[in-house]
Amino acid sequence: MSMKDIIHLFFSDSPKMSKIKTIIGEIARTDITVLINGESGTGKDLVAQTIHLHSDRAAKPFVKVNCAAIPHGLLESELFGFEKGAFTGAHLKKPGKFELASGGTVLLNDIGEVDVSVQAKLLQVLQDGEFSRLGGDGNIVVNTRVLTTTKDHLERSMLEGRFREDLFYRINVISITVPPLRDRREQILPFSQYYFDHYRTKYGRTVSPLSLKTLNTFRDYHWPGNIRELENAIKRIVLFGQEEAVVQDLTRNKPGKNTNAESPREGLPGNGEALEAFELRKIGKTAAETAERKVIQDTLTETHWNRRNAAKLLRVSYKALLNKIQKYGLNELEIPHQNEGAKDGQLRG
Image 1 (cartoon, rainbow, N blue to C red):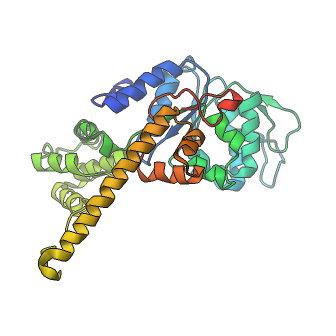
Image 2 (image 1 turned 90 degrees about the vertical axis):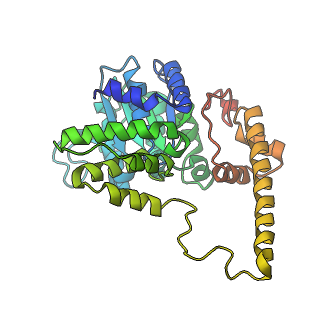
């Protein structure tokens, strides 16, 4: 399957993903920075690659940097390169990722892992398109589009002083949130078939088609590891023929599954009265949380996801609102009209 086919699969059969594809179509041919949010394994890299392939830079390099996998002490030289003799072991001049991606796109995965000491230099590249190599004197000019991903709440890191506010607004001109697989279940079976066919061909295995039981289990499972977890499950089936074992593992790990053989009412006093009281409290709490979620969602929509204005309208602290957004899994999938940085003339996604 070609990259074009993979991208088609990734954005098909899901209204939420179709909406993201529309946003990509609107921003791909611009040079604005994009922050791609989402849990691990949701496909943030593929969103970034789709933006690149639909841009005017498609024929130029697409360079990925996994910021979380590179030690803080080495990240600066990895991004910006170094001159010969810049440090012990620097026997030759080495260009950094920004130079290698010049004319194209650089993707900074897990941008929240970039140390504060490197963030100022990263900000300079975004503002001026130039930087100096480690150990160098003159500036190097590049024409590189920057895309970033995060699975964390950068706003929380910003409030805690671990991420520069000015850099946050620079990378967050447009924000795209990739929903978890459990929120786009209509894609589970197409992904399953794709990975099954892919690995069966790749490893030359003769494997019986996935059973109806397996497909139903896949469809109902919550997939905390998202597409990556699904891919690994399929790979295990194709390579080792462990279809039944995979199904058992997923069934055992299903949320809310009662692994206790006893009846949930056994051992409760008052002939079930304690359980009924507990259930009433639970119902009341659920109703209150549902109402609170609705109010927060409506307020964020009203303020075009300007969290500071929303916090003022809700009469809660900014930090408390961020906690509620995380608690209720509220996602922003549309291009909003303004944000906390609107005073600086910036657009937020």
